[in-house]
Length: 103
Length: 155
Image (cartoon, rainbow over all chains, first blue to last red; front, side):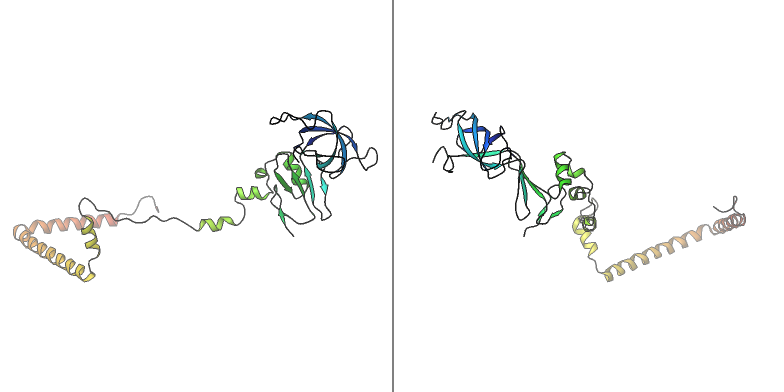
């Protein structure tokens, strides 16, 4: 369950390490974000690209993201329940495509 | 339809039951119920918790004992040569036919008897009176011993 100011891991190769959730899109104000929800995040920690030296995603960049893993977990309609050991998101561009360092 | 096994207790997990937990390092744990989940999170070793399958396996509870005990290892006999007789001599003696053995025995008996006869006749010629007295004394001693009752009752 992710709210405003929740710190999450960034689980892709965009370069960002840790992001902070600013807004959960498509839901009532104050309601939590679950797996599969779109959100707006701020990149708090960023990895350096050792190979090129460039940085596609910089610190305090505001990006959209999709929540992929939460500690709360999710329930499937067939009765399965799964939960993860961390909260993680994947950065996307505004059109909804996966924001990758290398296309 | 896949029936999973609880990682903690070892029980079967039917569809619709249980929880899966994926840790940050990628290890997956499937629990039957919150009892197992809580025990795992409390870091209780299932091998020490009496009702789990792991404990029962470790302490060999159940019917597995009977199957393993029936097998016993037997050492094989190995014939060796002794200082007095070589292997060939031992094997020759073993493999002798019973008729041959019997004949050998009878021969030996006959020879011994003949020896005894010859010695007896030689002794009789030298001292017959002494032998008779000795025999009489022995008989008297034996009689006395038998007559006396045991002291102290039953043993």
